[in-house]
Length: 237
Image (cartoon, rainbow, N blue to C red):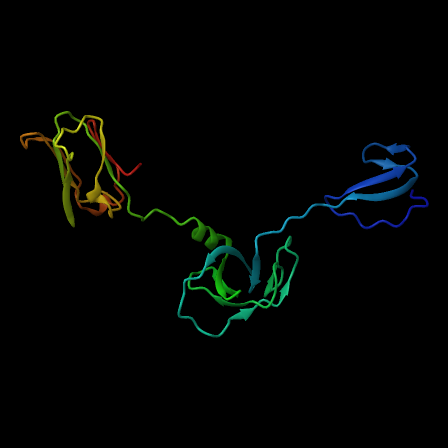
């Protein structure tokens, strides 16, 4: 029972409050106390600003931090941010942000994106899925660097060919390559796998010490790791 207590604000989750009471506990669980004389707010719950975001057509778009590179664009806006909520909250209605109003926007060229015109520049906002793809692009189809581990002694040079290139490797001073040495196959830069590769290791007199080939067939698509005896080709750095 509260007696002679001054009105107190409605507490929120995370607030720290001080309760002054008679000291008598009526029930321990759930807690019940007698003769409450005052309730005082000691510290308000801390709040943190969320990432800038907007809601358009029922979808949340988050700031990617990336500026748009589109140069030729339509001069007509697809909409405008007309309301806002506090920076610690998510927008809940269309054309609302948690950072300000008055910003025109257009739908982006990439699915799941819109572009806001702010401070004379266009900034990309994206759904969470599209934002992850922008910030952490897949490297699945990017060219890899390939490395060869020498598997025998007495190797003077490496010769290789691919469907659209050929080349090789040998030490500039003419010295022999050592077993276990790892070399970069520069001629394979630009390739995503080893399809169509023929590679040969030659000795001092041009004799073949080792050779291997990977047929240029669809079943070898994505083949990036060759192990043959002590010889290895891999794209793992």
